Image (cartoon, rainbow over all chains, first blue to last red; front, side, top):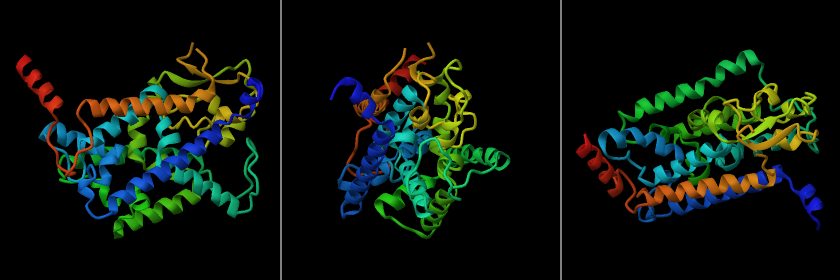
Length: 279
Length: 54
């Protein structure tokens, strides 16, 4: 295969989907490994693999000198890995490496298929009713909820002995099958929400996404649009799972998860390009 | 500088792995026993240094 053909056959969307499946399977394996008897002998609990656990336990660690129950120092390494991705490429962790994000993408895809979309045509609006795209008047205020959740969790972490989100941890529900009444409730909300609205959890409730949003403004690796080549056809708007409006003008939007679907969808050469800084 | 999109997945995975390893090297490694850990040796050293400087 020559270089041009190899270039043409490469698909960012397929790479992303492969990585997402690997993340989901890998997390499930780690989860299973940790629900077996003797969890504490296997390098800490399942919760110690959680990036958000690192955020939850950071303030107690700095102020009181010890981590919250069920978290340990490894949470900081996982958090550092997540922050590293964000420092380089903004919220790419949410778009590529988050297990919950992957499940939401799968649910949205399966919903469309169940409702009769046999083949998704890139850049063309789906004819299925679900997932919905909420009107801006409802969507915009709801997006601030995740920042409120983040603030609430950070304040609560100073007064709790265990991570407060553990009470309704979706990662535990999906990957380590640790269920409680509250976890069941949040699981139902998560699944129903994901069927109704694409990336429901990321848009409105995810505190990790809220914490990483700022990095979209400072990360050096970013998508850049060129108005000389872009004809504002709107194909990228249609494909954006985070529902960002006027994508080419809002490429540093805090909501962007850098999934690169816009870049993959764009039909005009050099209208959208991936660059280090803006130069 | 323009980047070929095919390298993007490698860039984010590499960033994740490098920073994860950095965390482990800083002393935030997986620990047996699991929960409620105190400051690691490096952090203790950093805190002591700061206190001494102050």
